[in-house]
Length: 207
Image (tube, rainbow, N blue to C red):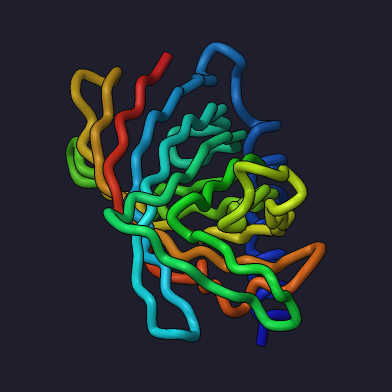
């Protein structure tokens, strides 16, 4: 299933990139614009042992508009666990016990978006992010030995739906809904499910 999702996401991202390259050739340089997007998202997290938690993501994305309805971008962000209590968990084939309330992840990558609907100042813009995430969680004895920190590198595909309202063609607040497709590059993360729907808010500043 993960391989099928990987091929679908990869194909969508390549299609958007080709569209951006072809449309960008037809534009006068004076019409190109930049944007900075600041965002915050709540992310649901679940797992095999029925625990439920949530994380808070904060990030920044830089966007380059090839046309009013098409952009390419680069982003960076960080996720921290926001659960009010400690949650202990033991991964399969691992004798150590981890405190999931210490989990965090730094992520970065590239993005492409295309405006499919606009009415006056209201917009609907789906986009796709492809990047890497570096996830860490501490073992319960970690304060005495840094060896007891679980580290995973994750390939991340993140399709999103963005709804926004543009103010005076300069500021664009909005809400976003997204789904994360994580693929671990150096170890099993299936028991700690990051693949959930998340939602949040953003502010975009256009230049």
